[in-house]
Image 1 (tube, rainbow, N blue to C red):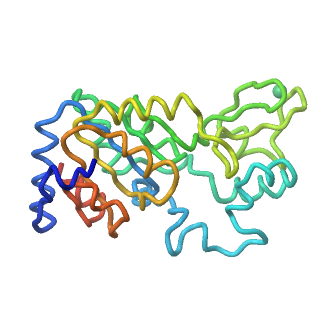
Image 2: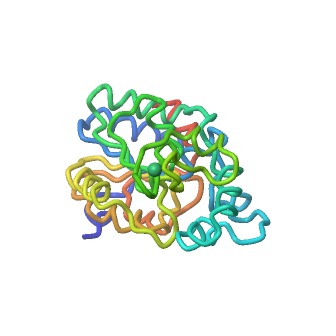
Length: 251
Ligand SMILES: [Zn+2]
């Protein structure tokens, strides 16, 4: 179904569009927020795929190779060198977007945050119902006995982090070649299918499963917030090309 055909596209300047978003939020009690790397960039965390993000830095191997399942198994030491240097986001703080979303959940308006980020910043801001599609650096498990470890066991370790049982500790972060957690996927689909307002922000929507997930939406309004245009802009009836900070400080 082409949502754009059913709901007239709202045109106006950024401020008018933010006012329109505020109105949509005030009218809804079943909002779902779908966010990508852009949600965390204003907290200082680099966007993997942006022009000067992680993926364009120079390493011995390309980051998408280092962050793969095969590489983790075969070059565990090298994997952890990169992971500890580049993926440690435990010392960052939530920004205005995370905080406003937590407030909307507390008010009973927002039902779920679905995120592609692994930094735990939504929970840090107070959000409870967060579906982390790509996992989290806050959860780690022994590959042998499955014992749980917090982030410090990995980031503060020397070399390859290991369990007392001798097993290697692995972050619960979805690596390339790995499948997404089915429960999280199903919960995300259900949340989107039941929402009446879907806000998609800070994602280019080119990364699986973002583009396919949002097609489960059957509600009234889709709002896209992104600095740049995205391939799915035509699916939304309100597109705001502005920074997330600018938008959410006015919500
Ligand atoms: Zn163990």
